[in-house]
Amino acid sequence: MRELENLFTFKDRTTHMPSVSICIPTFNHGQFIEQSLGSATAQTFRDTEIIVLDNASQDDTEEIVAAAAVRDARIRYVRHPQNIGLIGNLNACIEMARGTYIKLLCADDSLQPDCVSRLVEAFERYSGVRLAGCARAVTDESLRTLRVARARSEFELVSGDAMIEECFFFGNRIGEPTAVMFRRADSLEGFSDRYTQLPDMEMWFRLLRGGHFAAIPDALCQVRSHPQQATWSNDQSGRIIEDRRRLFREYAESAGRSATLSRKCLWDVRMAYIAARAAAAGYRPGDSCIDELFFPGAYRPLTFPLIKAMRALGLKLVWKTS
Image 1 (cartoon, rainbow, N blue to C red):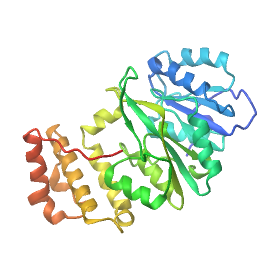
Image 2 (cartoon, one colour; image 1 turned 90 degrees about the horizontal axis):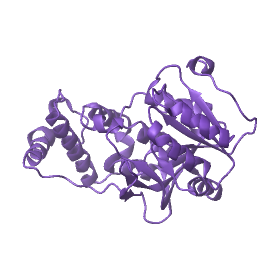
Image 3 (cartoon, rainbow, N blue to C red; image 1 turned 90 degrees about the vertical axis):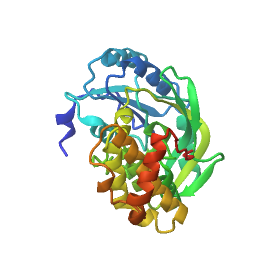
Image 4 (cartoon, one colour; image 1 turned 180 degrees about the vertical axis):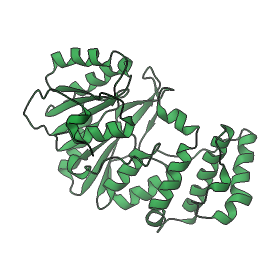
């Protein structure tokens, strides 16, 4: 990895080593970042640093952050000379953080005032916690709540192995980067650039090996859903398929060791669903190249044709992911 000095320059405004680093990776989110920054500075847990890592934005992000930094000395601004990609910027967050804990905050999201304090409490109160996460209010671009997504309806310490299996089969119940907190010392390996759509979930899997997930049922953050997000384009392309194939190769043996028959069937159905959706959007190659399945013998003659026909008829599959 290149030295940090070659990636960016910044002015270190304080020598205090904070308990929590709130890291805000951003690219062209000037329309949202003032609100995001405001939610970071309003945290009831005050022993924080707030680092904005700007991935060479072409909008007014720098001016907005500069104005906020005048009002709050905890804010540091880092601008990359060129765009280093989403994964590169997330890993720069980890490299730049000085706190014991890292709280990622995507620039188009926001935190409730007690989010950081509640997540820190989970680490401080319970031993063995490797990852803490809260429910999140999924909103539209104007922050109107569409739904609340949560891993559990009540607070629970979930074993890492159980949470990995659950997310492997049902999707990322833990949540987006904005919804979680982890120790800096546990995360130095960083997010994997081998994943495009699922780098956060794969990172959660690695953090949870040998530890617990602290599931907080309260919605302590807001996560925007809007067409500017990379997720929207990835979801309609083959990138999500390639990520799920890679996830299968790397985690199916451990996640599927104690999995029920229904969960294994669910994986194949979900693969068929995203393959049919991507095929409808013009992605090639299609289903014939997918081998990362629990029941490949049934997939091509039965599972995929059935799901494809259901899509053609306008029928939708719904599985509970939160």
